[in-house]
Length: 102
Length: 170
Image 1 (cartoon, rainbow over the protein chains, first blue to last red):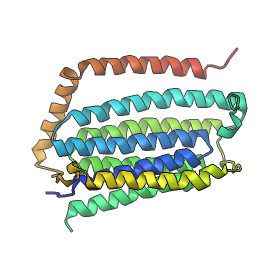
Image 2 (cartoon, rainbow over the protein chains, first blue to last red; image 1 turned 180 degrees about the horizontal axis):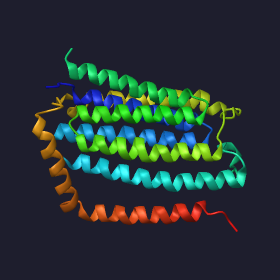
Image 3 (cartoon, chains in turn brown, red; image 1 turned 90 degrees about the vertical axis):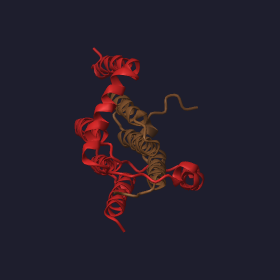
Image 4 (cartoon, chains in turn red, cyan; image 1 turned 180 degrees about the vertical axis):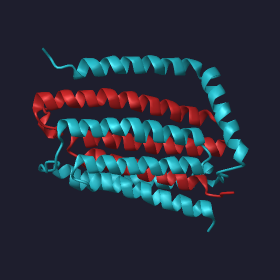
């Protein structure tokens, strides 16, 4: 029987989310920025599963299932956008995509 | 130090190390592989929390399908070493401390919230797993039937959107 407190999982989730935010801010490659979004979604999923375990209810697991489905759809559309950007701009650097920048 | 504690710390270290590798790596393909590492470690943690179905879905859909899609696009676009452009000074002097502050305040809040004191009993009896997955599926197709059908429409829209976006303009 394991007795790992829920708070450990939540702290790990917070750390992973923070690292995802750092990657999102610091990375310049548009594909890596997408991957940091996936990292943040994974951190949130861990918190969902931990809360589902703590409350002994399965609703959190269903939410994780939906988050995974939406993330997969988001990745498909986002990578299509990435391909379009790289065809138009000949670069994957987000700083080269500045048409709307004032 | 019981076995679940050791397993938790091993997989937590693997996950955090993979996340740091994602930030440090210069090549996008290295970032993608370290993200796969994070996802597999998280799948192991889901097993530790007694969520077998979610763990399997994590490995199959996330580490399998989504990351293969990412690696495929990285290879297709021939993404090389990330260009090092001049960072804005805001990012260095305001962004990094704020990100660390966010991280620590989230961790502090979660560690000291009321639910944090609850003790999770992880991998329970062996037959608990089958019941859990069965209950999960019945909940998915009864209580959450409408969101489930809505996600199927969402996936259909995503397929169409990806096709329209990735089509080469004539």
